Image (cartoon, rainbow, N blue to C red; front, side):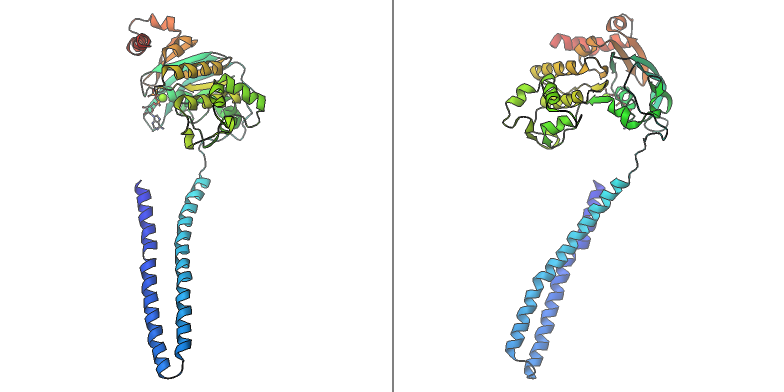
Length: 355
Ligand SMILES: Nc1ncnc2c1ncn2[C@@H]1O[C@H](COP(=O)(O)OP(=O)(O)OP(=O)(O)O)[C@@H](O)[C@H]1O
Ligand SMILES: [Mg+2]
């Protein structure tokens, strides 16, 4: 914000003097011409007619000169914009494929976290020695205190960040040894706030797999429970949605994001469940769409709803960056003074009563 203000100020400073200076120069110029012209007419070296013609053409010259000044100011703006753009081009991502990386050949067996430690800021550990094995086709629910590190755990799998120590292995291969592109091709995401861009619904879904054909597209639209909604639109899938999907409701945006993840058909699915309140009906539809997405996939779901937790195969309780409990709902609920039991009583049993 400050930087933007500073830039706008410096531009205004550079451009602002142009106009008054131009006026002053023009005024002085006209005065000089008048004085000299007068002198020449008096000396009979010039007729008053030619002088009038000269002054008229001089005045005509004023406008283009002024436009030129404005154009120069415009060019200054463009240069400022260009330097910002080039700064972006010059950014080098910190996380790159290893030169000897191998392509990830599908997902066969398991994902392992081995003594994973991680910190965003030096000496502020966020994950402390997390070890966890998730077999293929398991649904693992992550629960725990806010700021405990659940989102961080899932962000490490597609290598949005790299572990500080320890490792994450897929089918026994460290993910840092896998080609980044192929790793991310095997993972789909649905976040709380999904990125939709302004464009058609079709384009937004196809972003998950630009090569999908029409029948695949229709299938995911049905599976994501978007068909009824799309039938009500005059242009159907070709309806343009506003910036960030602003012309859709929260539930519709979620389902477009789910359809996008479905069409990608990646074996590993990461879900950060929306906490924002949807009304009961759209919540139920989103839930059905999610259930379809999760079928036959290995799923990490950051759970906020009791139903998700109960449907999960296992639950991992992440508390202050540590994996404190791991097991099924029935196992964890039996631990006296257990973290899960506490969380369940605090958060979810209440939700059950009100639901
Ligand atoms: N980009 C970041 N830079 C620095 N610190 C971060 C960053 N992202 C998260 N953190 C910190 O890491 C810790 C864990 O955050 P994380 O988002 O993983 O928690 P969470 O369990 O997902 O919480 P919630 O349930 O509120 O979403 C928090 O203390 C948070 O402040
Ligand atoms: Mg989170």
